Image (tube, rainbow, N blue to C red; front, side, top):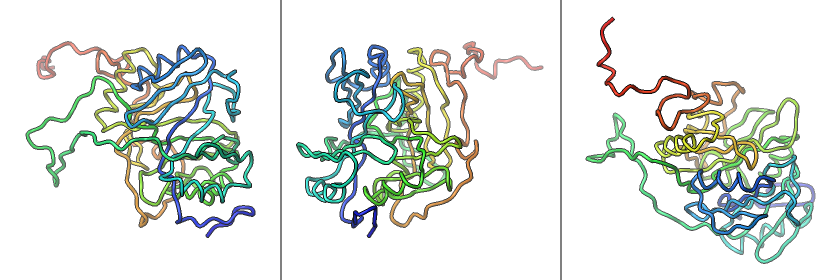
Length: 334
């Protein structure tokens, strides 16, 4: 049992499944349209003021013009994230969450949804999940001990098709307050932390390493760090990243690997706000997991990473010499 203000919540009675939908605010709708199409999302509706994209499992990404009436207030100037929609399993869950959230700022209910404002000022909504369950063929990795891929090569991807929005990372002014809100009101679980600096939170005791990462900078502010899209496997991270490079979009960092979550990543600058990430192969956690503590530092963020990315045409690091077509063994002896 947890106490948050005057609200008492029995944490184990319900849990959130993941991110169902996000909304960005931006003034450059045309550039955002091209970016997310190149990113691998399908556009399902569009107007001059609003674009709606969909991932493979029907997770939605909305880009709305900054002047759109009724658009939730941003936690920083546009372009940025305006709202996050979290999915729950059933209407029964919504009823229980409604009882827990009824006294929170800007609480509203309508048509099987609940909306509210978190302590950082970000608008969020709960709804019965609209995502569909899917089965996808993914790469099998052969290790010394496990030989799962037999008579079959690993896949190579010409581009990515994101499965869903896997997590978001927010800058917050008051880490402990915001983290406590998500844990005590919405039932999130602490996976790992940088004490006093950052909390990795997952929606439920069993699941991927984090659905939400809250980060407090030395000069604390509220804002968006990045939105991360899950893809099938590490090979799709590489294929998707090289496709974005061929399309002319700028890499911020990647490919690389996070040692804390084990995920392989590739970050791009996003015209809808901050960064977006392809990632795969994150750790899966259960109720038995014990949260760890880390000291922030470059080796904690990335075990390895390529600054500037890989050129999608040469398949080499940006500005590296293009391949000659010869085998490396063709080089003359010194």
